[in-house]
Image 1 (cartoon, chains in turn green, red):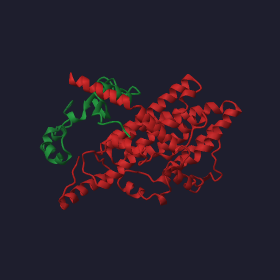
Image 2 (cartoon, rainbow over the protein chains, first blue to last red):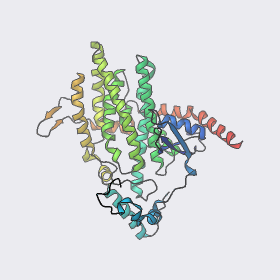
Image 3 (tube, chains in turn blue, red):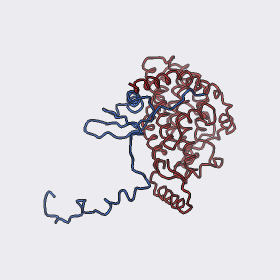
Image 4 (cartoon, rainbow over the protein chains, first blue to last red):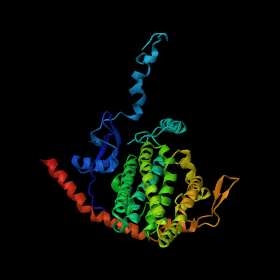
Length: 97
Length: 317
């Protein structure tokens, strides 16, 4: 039925909505190579001026943390309340703090 | 992909974690553990939704070459291109559950997975382009807005993108019909005839009545669905009646009237045997839609092969 012997690789797509903003992940697509991935990304994810810049990255090039390790991985930051400004008591009458 | 654990207590712990996430109305993300039945239900629902977008290009695509003006042609092209885009968002979301694009395409082309029954009705007049935008996309919006809050993250995110674009679809359809209603008697008659054909199939888009919708309850418990079929159907009728009045068309249901007590419109029962027949494959255009999709897939094979060969040649340099 289908003549595709192998699938095109999966790319993740990141779009910068406008200047001054970060690129944000918007979705994924398949493409035979990087150049085509960029063209497809434009057609699929920016039909209405959603972006001024696109990144495409092969999904297999991404290293991700595992959801199972979520607690141990993020534990080091969990008990460090002194990293937040609200940890410190400053009298209300001290200005600009 | 997450592997199924062998130890029973580990599985119970994973299940409890999943249940807690659902209970918090938080989202499940692709690499989280999830029950097999949840994954299977999502694959089926998202795939059928994706197939619907792709097959849904055909009824309106039928009129691109015959649109009455360059303006209408540009609008229709943009709309059909959106449907392709919606299919791609949804296929991507579905693939995060561990199925491949080739598998999904195969399931559609072999008829093992379905798509929305509405696309098995023909578009006999140009007014159908407007009616599809107004009623069919209107019904789709009713179905899809609650899905933006569905429990599976990638599906919800795809739905948010889709809903933003559907609003254009519905408005261009309604505007097209308004333009025709301001035209000649013949044009007004075309609009009415088109609404007559699409009204009942649009109501069927919400699926069978709750009493006959066996999977609904579980999907709602899992937060995949947020509203029942009958709730959404009622919402659609309530939204649509004033729009029909403003347009000056009659909805073809003698039982349609405002019910002060309920605060909703009462309406007649769609012909559920017709819905069952269309789903079974006996609708007016089932064979044609699939044959067209297969031909498009086969005719495009050389493009996919050429792109792959080019990528390999460039990669080898």
